[in-house]
Length: 349
Ligand code: 1VU
Image (cartoon, rainbow, N blue to C red; front, side, top):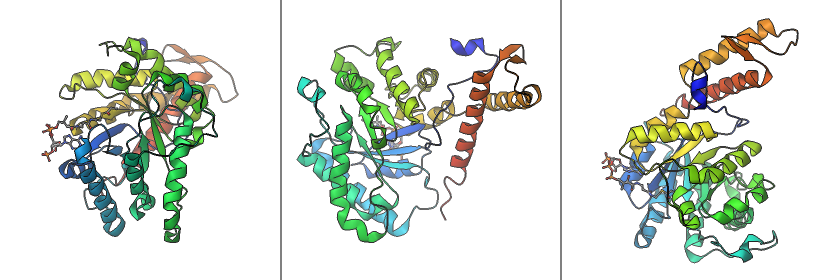
């Protein structure tokens, strides 16, 4: 356990270059209005209004209607007092991807694919005024190539053309792909040259295991390659990687252990399926007081010891040098980001 070798627990340090905070990523089956209301008053960093796996096909029309009503309400009245106005509102749309097909593994960037009827209806929600004003992020399941994202963007922009008169920037569209197949993992290097299309990346463990025909083992070791590859790509791009769901949603100890494992791998957040999971996730993916104290003291010591540019020195019984200074700087930067984000989160002007 790498953390035990440190005097205090030093978690993964952020390299997010000012990207927004996405620690807790709560799925909210959108056909349930009660869930939507609950999510809006929760401390989730991302509220993912789900039209996909959490919603039976027979309930999708109701789910779309609920989202449309919410967006109209936000557009006209804004947030109510006590609602989490800092949360990123997301919509998870229906997207089948091209599972396991060799043909699609080699799709060229010139290919353009028409959306299915379900997806087309889901994307209409991205062209109602509230979705541009707030703005709403698209969560795209079963994303297998970066061209999936490019295609979605093109469809949304076409639908949004009629909104130009609103005066908002209709070209702003944040997208978060969900990586859930062997094909997507093998295509990750292709995503690295298309990072402008997405602002975070999500790992979906259940679908990934199904795609490989493997069980989800207790130690998660059979998913290490996929999870680490996603983290590496995201850190290269300066965007947050978001870890798998903890299905054991009534057991917060299991959740805490999973969160810690995610942090050590470099994830910046975790998906949630129940509001009770949010506090644990937000806490573990934030910095502890000890970490902030350690980083502050180290950077003070650097000022004294390293003012003339000398490299390594001893701090609290350990050798420290430039990579450790960077770690301390990153800790303080992330801490500042979190403090700023939490300020006035539930106060509505
Ligand atoms: O106290 P209240 O009655 O006001 O609220 C209940 C309940 O309504 C609410 N709640 C939720 N609110 C927002 N989002 C949620 N996801 C959510 N879940 C519950 O919280 C209060 C307490 O609820 P509970 O303990 O009574 O829980 P239930 O028995 O009502 O629901 C449990 C399940 C697991 C069914 C529910 O949490 C749920 O449907 N979760 C989402 C499942 C989902 O979306 N699955 C697909 C996404 S995961 C994935 O695709 C991985 C990539």
